[in-house]
Amino acid sequence: MKIACFSTKSYDRSSFDRLLPESDHSFSYFEAKLDFHTLSLAEGHQAICSFVNDHIDAAMMKKMAKMGIGLIALRCAGYNQIDLKAAVENGIKIVRVPAYSPEAVAEHAFALILTLARKTHKAYNRVRDNNFSIEGLTGVNIHGKTIGVIGTGAIGRAFCRIAKGFGCKVLAYDVVENEEMKKLGVTYQPIDEVLGNSHIISLHCPLTPETHHLINAETIAQMQDGVALINTSRGALVETKAVIKALKTKKIGFLGIDVYEQEENIFFKNLSEEIMQDEQIARLMTFPNVLVTGHQAFLTKEALAQISATTLANITAFEKGEELLNEVKG
Ligand code: NAD
Image (cartoon, rainbow, N blue to C red; front, side):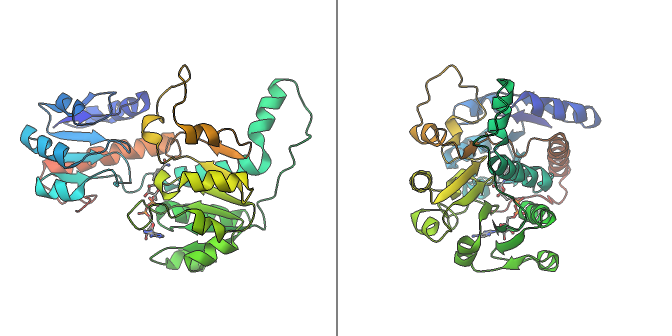
């Protein structure tokens, strides 16, 4: 099959190119983000391969159907960016990569926690300037802390295992409780109790209408003073305005984010020569206790290999008319 791959970065290309000789598929790589206009680049292809910030709405689905595109192969787990109803109406199948090294994201969440807790980002800069003073670098132990996990799916569970290894008390909230986690010693509680009882809160639930702005002024008020909030899931789980306010009052003591509600126009781009127009991210970056990474939690060699292998297997299953094990149904 001929597949038009959008929002392509060098690491996508090399990981697909490694596997393509073993398949009958050919990829056209486009750096452009997928939108109504760039969709024309997919003329002559039978499938589209897209990523997290490639929003596909009803008008685009209609255009795809006219172009003869029958499959959207998402090279990510989340699918909140897709109009699933419109996909069904236009007979377009959606497949995704449900789990690609959940440990990659869970470990990144912990990297954010450890960096903030031990100020290694500051130490790194200091010693490079031959400044070996440790004044102002006092950290906090993770051992013995209570960590609240919202969403114990593949990533949340990997995160809980790491947290247990650190000697933390782990609380969790999920709409479906997981027996393996209970055996591990994770305690499920209603969400307000998890928020209220945790020193560190890590978000691992998907973005849905129910979870949109799950973290807002009201839910922040339920949290402990000085709480650490970690978001490696989706930006819009968090109302940024409320978080900035809580950082100013020190209600939130640490913030680590790999995702941001308005990330679409910022992340995955080198804007170092430009003037930042987004006031909220600019404000967030002024706080010494805030760490922002640009949606890189998934970015490990192992995860990339898994993403390309699963995406190609999804495409092959579609081509052969086999059962789509990783289909996202509308
Ligand atoms: P998953 O589907 O395995 O798990 C999601 C869990 O959230 C499930 O257990 C589900 O029951 C639970 N859930 C659903 N609605 C909920 C609610 N209202 N409250 C609490 N829990 C709820 O997904 P996953 O693989 O663990 O991924 C989780 C999220 O991580 C994805 O949706 C995606 O947005 C994000 N993600 C981010 C990156 C990154 O690079 N930053 C990479 C992969 C995934």
